[in-house]
Amino acid sequence: MTLDYFIKRLWNDPIRNILFCIILFYPLVEIIFYLKDIPLGNAVYYPDYAFFLTCNTAGVGHIFQSLLLWFMPIYCLVLTADDCIEDYHIGLKNVLVSKIGIKKYVQAHLVKSFVYAFLLIFSAMLINLLMVHIIFRGGQFSPYTDEAGFISTLSRFYQWEVKNPLWANIVFSLITAFMSGLISMVGTISAIMIHNKKLVYGITLIFWFIPFLQKNSLMYLFQPHTEYDLDTLVPIGVTVSCIYIAYILFGYFKEVRFGKTTI
Image (tube, rainbow, N blue to C red; front, side, top):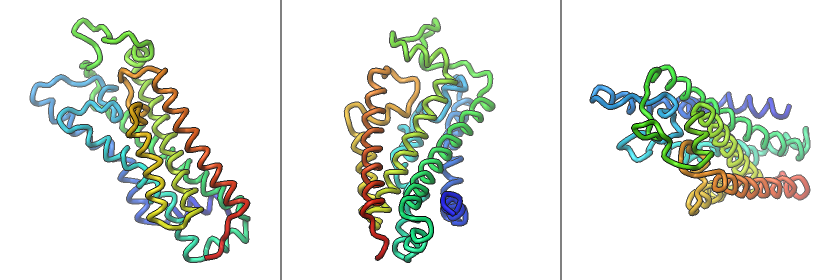
């Protein structure tokens, strides 16, 4: 009665199930905007360049990616953290902790939140990737090469991405899913510590938006086939991950050692 119990509770909530399905299939909506341009004589994208994370949809200002990625903490909080706040206010946390201990209680919630968010986002990306390969099979248009087929940048990582677009999309999907899992854990440990929904949502959004608004934005980690090289991407990923992990560990040890279960 730990991880399995918490996961079953998520699946028994119809609102969370609806949100789960929306996020899982949401990236497919962007395909419609690629398809509507084809009858107008526009070139058919090479499948990997119609992938959701490439942000190549013309004329809509990356609205599809913004709606998913910018508000990722909110989705993760609803899916994996709100139950921690509910447990506290109805007294269920006391019952669970008395049975399994505070350590297992916190561990199970953290693992649940990471695995749930990671698998959801990675599955959503893979479904989109599969569908663009089916729908745009045979497409040849590439926005990353000139008319002679040459790659327009000297960055080695960029060249690798253009030459291996499928693998690049998978790698960036894993990165996106990983960071989604981490911010989900940030929200969950905040919910376990604070119990106030407004504060939990505010803190989690701050952790997400501050890296987004930096000069070297967290968003760079979620978009393959850009001009940013590893010397830019790696420090962003390492720095943000370390900050998230440090906060999660702080919250974990605080709760395990000093956490209170009573209201």
